[in-house]
Length: 436
Image (cartoon, rainbow, N blue to C red; front, side):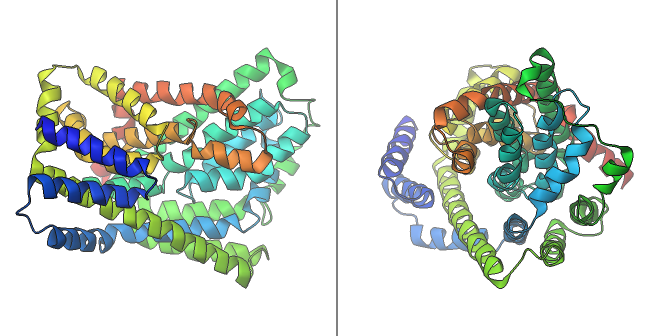
C-alpha cells in the first residue's frame, strides 16, 4: 500500500505541476493508479458511470442557481445600497464605519454563496469609500479580506453544496450548521476592529457627524436595505421554514435578484448576458472538478488507500484535538499552493474517514472544511480573496496579505475553538430537528 501512496503523490504532483486543469489532474491520477494497480478493471465504464452520477445529482441543481443569483446581484446597485444603508448605524460604534465591511459581507453572503463574489461586490464600494474618508488602508483591506470569506460560511454556500454531495450529507443541515459559526466569526472580526480603533483612533479617520434615528430608519426603505433584506428572508427563510428545498429557494433567489435589478434599473440585456455567461463558466469548472474528484475517490476506494491511511493514523493514537490540529496545519499548507475547493475534493476521501473515526460527525467536518477554505482564500500566493482585492484597489499582494494576517489568525483560532466545543456547530440543526 505504500507503493500506491507514493504513486498517488507522484502522479498528482506531476500532473498539477505541468499546469493542467485541476479536473484533468484528478482524472489522470485516478486513471493512472487504476491502470497500474487494477489493470483488469473497465476504467472507461467506471469513468462514464461516475461522470453521469456526478452530473445528474439532484442536490447539485441548487449550485448553478445560487451562482447565477450572485452574478446577477453583482451587476445591481446592491453594493451601494449596503454601504449607504449600514453606514449611519455604525458611526457611534468603536471602529465606526470600518464595521460596514463586515456587516455588508455578512448580509451579502446570505444571498451569494461565494467568497470571491462577496469580496468583489462589497469591496468595490466600501474599500474605496473608507480609504477616501481617511480610514487606514491596511485595516480596510484586511477586514475586507477576512469578511469576504464569510461568503462560504454563511448559507447558502457553494462549498457546502459540493461537500454535501461528495460526503452524502444533507445540504439543508449544513446550511443550518453554518449560521451560528458565521455570526460568531463576524462578531469576532468586529470585536477586533473595535479594539484596534480604541487603541489607535487615528486608524478610523475623523469622526463623522452623528445620524438621527429618522435618518437610520430611512436606510431601510426601498432604495436602502429593504430589498436585499426581503430577498434574504425569501431565500433563507423559505428553506429553514420548511417551505422550499435548497434548489427551490435558489430559484426564488434568481427571480428575486432579477426583480431587484429591474427595480433598481441596473440590469440590462447586456449585463444579464454577462451574468449568464460567467455563471456557466463557473458551473462548468466546478462540474468538471466534481467529476474528477468523485472518480479519484472511487478509484482510491477500490485500491483500499483510505482504509490504509485511516488505520495508520489510528495506530498513532492521536487525540481528536491533535488530529484536528494536524489537519488544520495540513490544509493551511495545502492552501498556499491550491485553491480551496480543489483542496477539499482532492483530500476528502482520505480525511473524512479519519475525522469520523475521531468522533466528529459529517456536519461538523463540513463546517471545519469551510473554515479551512476561508483560510486558503487569504493565504498567499494563491489566496483568491487577496487577488480580488489587489484588482480592486491596486498595490502588491504582500502588504494585502500582511493586512489579512490578523483575520487569518482569528479564523484559525475560531476553527480550533469549534474543535473544542463542537456543539456550536450542531446546536441549531439539533434544535430545529427536535422541533420538527
